[in-house]
Length: 190
Image (cartoon, rainbow, N blue to C red; front, top):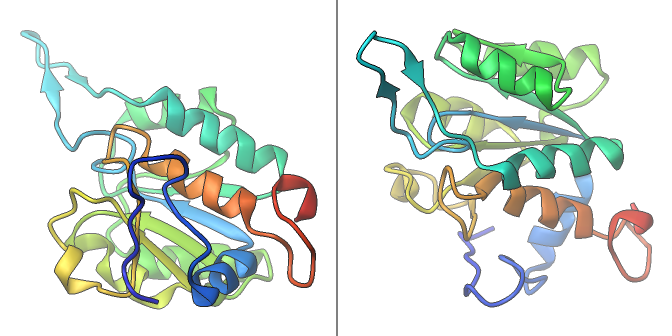
């Protein structure tokens, strides 16, 4: 699967690739990094030293749409901040791992507990600490502003940048993937 980008008009993807469709259809669990994916990779500090992050509401809706369709979202982030836990709580994402140093080992354990193989996992990340997991999953995804795009040419690349709805792009693609053997597409075909 070569890197694929949307053209900015309509969906951020097309079913031009049978391999893209096959990989999207196989997904049973969705993992995500936070900084650089749900945020613009910047960290803001108040004059009192309080950390602040901005999250796209598009990504939150993407997580809700996936949940409603029966696809669980798992957060794996190397940062250990209560901001991420609060955002996940608001979105009813229950599988949240903060301060993760080995994302691949953590996702292996999560997938195994659910009877899912790594080939059935989509993971969206943006930096070198995501590489081992991105290389292991069946559906690796990068944001277009990722500094590691050239290191993972087989990843699907979202149209929207981190912090601007990249996770939503992934959610929409997965929800539109017709179930194997089904005609048409969309959430009802899954």
